Length: 156
Image 1 (spheres, rainbow, N blue to C red):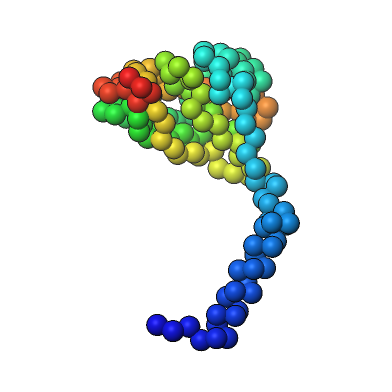
Image 2 (cartoon, rainbow, N blue to C red):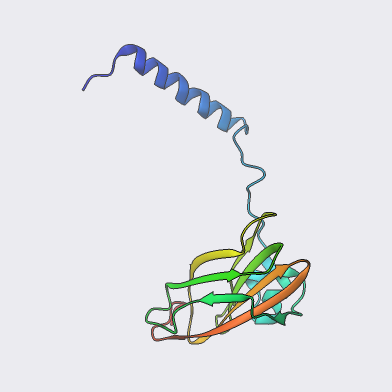
């Protein structure tokens, strides 16, 4: 297949333009860069992880949070978890596995007007509670569900 000279020149010019823009920093997604809460992800206990990510570990239980996860996970390396909530003005949803060496598995910061829904896959070292911490209307709410792990995913 031969490329016509004009098509080749158009593609070369377009690629060069994009490369120059990226090199000059014009295409850097400044508003989308993730914030890394280092203290939360390096905490070795549940309280430290929750405090590190949302500023406090004073949560109240809420029946408006639903955790969908398997009762028994055959492989702890890939455990599907879905968190939904009927709470309004959800700001963030964090997922914690209480028996992991580093309990905080994920934290999602939601935009205003976003639906209280996240779905991900986490690693679990062994059988433990999966805890969802939802920040909504400036308050912290939580719900937990025990997941039994037959083969650990965090090196176990």
